[in-house]
Image 1: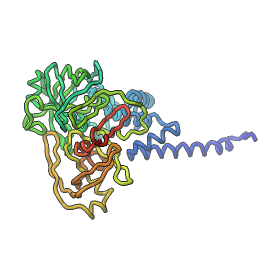
Image 2: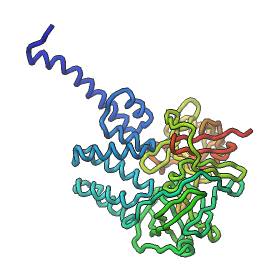
Image 3: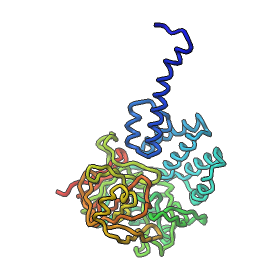
Image 4: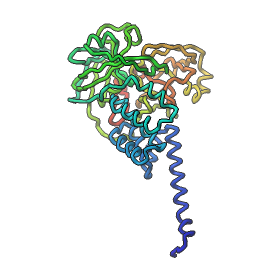
Length: 409
């Protein structure tokens, strides 16, 4: 039957509008609670706003798609709340890839578009140390095998054709070195200082230096920035010359993949068997590399930190598994170390905890549960090398966003 009145047309239209609003509310809830895997699955079944599609692409390391979608949000509504969030997610992409010129340009565009935001002054202060730094570039790229000391995470690198041996740190969002190391390599240290968050959530001051060339195996980088810290600070106060530095996410991410074995080999740049991300268990949440693992039948999220020798659990764990902590835990105190800083926290210690990490069952003995949340808001703890070393090898693949622990034979 034909409907000829406006009232009838509205009656037909209202249910569709209601469903669309409900769907958008569901997506917004997943976005605000940072349930990234669920948001990604929800987007497959419907058309969705560009912001959510761009954020999911950023979270799962599809940077090209993320940049396109997030820029389209800004272009279509430059002073909307969605544009403000799009600027933030673009900043995370530029920061983790060491593109500091783009990072500063993005932040300045956001400050100009939203001059009355209360976060502005804090953001300007935090970003100050990265002003004038270039965009890191990846040049010649070829898979290669490096060698390390048994069970060690220090690998050989070349900086301006000078040899060094640095550890690789997936918990560090900038590359770092000591003042004496920068001088040994002939790098000019910028006078402008900035601040960075450490593993204990304390902001510490740093200066910066730029290396025109960094080579890891047969992967070449140009315009690589390093945060520079005094020699008497952690983690290199006791390290010999040539080892007072670390390669963080801007370089590690540029390697595309990294496979570490106990017996002294690190394979980098190996091609993924598949580009399918449906089995991914890694994601980026703000400025953290986050791993999905399992405790019993429950899925848990933790930051993945190869620069940490030991694993720490946080207040979120104590809340999520309160009965376990209260029944088996003993009151204790635990020291947590970050760059240039160490802090002791009240904690509960469990004798042991069985986890499934990278599709392999591992044991955390003992399990230290800090009674404070110092890491990513979404996470129950920070997983270190004590868990990763329980397999014969571990592989981090940034194409498929997957961590795999290989069982001992």
